[in-house]
Length: 427
Figure 1 (cartoon, rainbow, N blue to C red):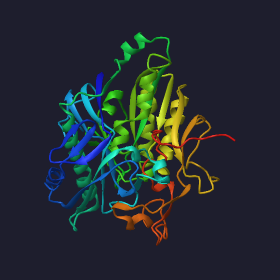
Figure 2 (cartoon, rainbow, N blue to C red; figure 1 turned 180 degrees about the horizontal axis):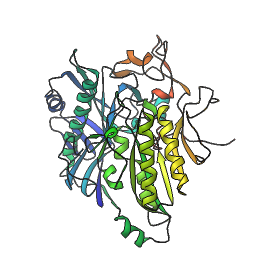
Figure 3 (cartoon, rainbow, N blue to C red; figure 1 turned 120 degrees about the vertical axis):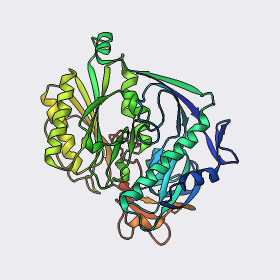
Figure 4 (cartoon, one colour; figure 1 turned 120 degrees about the horizontal axis):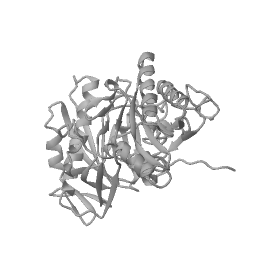
């Protein structure tokens, strides 16, 4: 597949009479967005706010972050959800690079997060650097929790599509081209390079822990092979409320750095032959089935190496280790990307499961590390939930407006795709 991503660089966002992109500024008609969102009668109210890098703004509880895009050729945006179920990953897509839609409002599940646009909290989340259109939404009082999540998810995607349309006729500032050949052609093209694939584990435990592939709940799939460019082009979206620090938002999927980095090395140091997507299940039999299939597919396409990324922690640690162990037993080298819940002192066991074969690990950081966030001038959303979200505790929100929480509360802080800002150093 060959995908052209046209990047339209956005360095400011402003309200305007017409939604458009002009000289690097995204102008937004708030009334049209409100009308679009409130077409769903289950949404009681919506406000549109803007948040720019460096502003004294705190957004919470964050549900999803989405990059606005428009498909010029090769299907539509968010296939199977917003657009028809056409295969994406090829053709031309224009991207409003530097812009984002952020959804917030009344809390759905306790595992929702914080984005600070300035201060120490901003240093832990990549989303502090985006020109953000924030939807503050409330739903009807009698709505069920899963419907609450659904309507807010769809609203965010619709607004991202709406904003993306502003880039349809704009000439991109730069164009990146990505291409992956069919397996046998790829092997023939680079026969002397190690064949490497990416195993992406998708959160799929249910009860607000869901991910969607072409609109299908990932817990209903068996592991399968897809082109890397399909992921880059919106085939996978977030629908979960797992801990904010290691949740893969839709923006993460659209900009998966593992896919980008492997494509950058394709034909140079390795032969990136594809992606195996697999789920994270609750029951042991399902975990065994999915990890068996993942290892079988890795063996079937004769891989030399695999990178495995996890989403979430605790129960999914078992899926991670099962996948790693079984793939290693096929004679295929693995590297895993995870994060840690090692206690506030960093001295506790990092993962809930382990195996000697899982001996090459990249960590996104310790989610239990405590951080103090200063009072900021403006709150978008509902600050009262800070004591209740994962990583917060009774007394996290202080009377003076400062907050004491674990990194777990900060959206993307220890992301297990490596889409974060933490690093390590030796002394």
